[in-house]
Figure 1 (tube, rainbow, N blue to C red):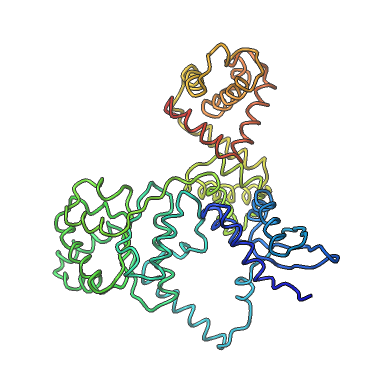
Figure 2 (cartoon, rainbow, N blue to C red):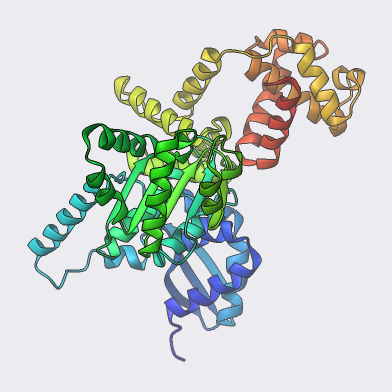
Amino acid sequence: MQKPDKEKVWAEVLASARVAVSDATYNTWLVNTHLDSLRKVDTNRYIAEIGCNSSYVKATVEKRYFGLLQDALIKVLGSPCDLVFEVKGGVEQIANFTPAVTPLFQKEESEENLMRKVASSRLRPGFKFENFAVSATNHMAQAAAEAVAREPGSSYNPLFIWGGVGVGKTHLMHAVGHRLLATSDKQVLAVTGEDFTNDIVEGIRNKTTQAFRNKYRKLDALLIDDIQFIAGKDAVQDEFFHTFNAVLAAGGQIIMTADKPPQEIARLEERLLSRFQAGLIVDISPPDFELRCAIVQIKSDEKALGITPELVQVIAGSVVSARALEGFLTRLQSESKLKSRPIDMELVSSILGKGVEEKKMVVSDPDKIIDAICTHYTIGKRALLGKSRSRLSAHPRQILMYILRTELNLPLEEVGRLVGGRDHSTVIHGVDKITKMAAVNVGIREEIFRIKGFFGG
């Protein structure tokens, strides 16, 4: 019997799995796998070795999608199949190590030329599609940016990406610029709204407006970050209006980012608003738990920290902002080097603990937190603080212990006293249980966020 083709088998497996999961799940986890080997162990059974591009992808896929992939493989092969997961580069990564047809010095010259173009285009070196983590919160924006990179000037023009601080707007916009420079000879420029404003002010002051217009209006792709900065500045808005029209008329692509959608930007001229709304407006929400895990893993790999999947989940479960995650990892790296300590649970917990101690507490009244728990779970205070061990009261009680401990940084004994006179060992158990659940369960994290909303935490 002819040996199955690995690439064809895995393509069929992924096609089958894609129907069963969300696009965000597929793009974040399953596309980062490949069938590394497939061998027959007896007349009617296979062993499939599945390669994953990182230890965290391996841990997640093996834990969550083992059954899905095994069922798909059995269906494709028509035989029973056992799965083994390994951290191994995919076909594309391996192909990068094959000898180039062109001489090495020409390849280096090409890379140097690309680096010069990146620098002159003012793109941030690390902001590429390859290290942009995808989940349900940013999948639409990522897909739109990929489409623009494939067909600039025709797909979604202009593209307007908005969202809060540190959600990845700038990263996506610059990723488009990198892709355009790597695949074409287009003229790309990335600036902020403030840069654009300063350039036009300088042009007016020095009577070099024509040089300014030559710089901006002949671009193939204009990428402007924080476009809301030009609102209320009449001369700047007027110049941007004409620049916008000139770039689009010549078939160029415009991408903008802002902290809010166009219609909510105060003092933005109506003619600009109408043009912004003529393209695609897409938002990026704050990262969910899965996305934060992916961000931690990507940044950890970039810094060569070697963080285990368990620590990835603890960090992602404790730090909410994407930008704060990067700051935490920088601090983790520094403390590990300065103190010659391994990156383990003890070090991570100590830094997370310092963050709690250094944070300015918004809430000082435990009664407000108790009331918030009662409101959220529709439970009476007597049942919450009483002796019952039923899940209806035990789970809200453990959430209460966790919030009192982490938000107010109260001693264990004080938490126990507030929660019906319980001893510190009961409090430790409750807090540890919720901490571990929050690290791996998005629903628990969302519960805690909603409860904090009741008391402003």
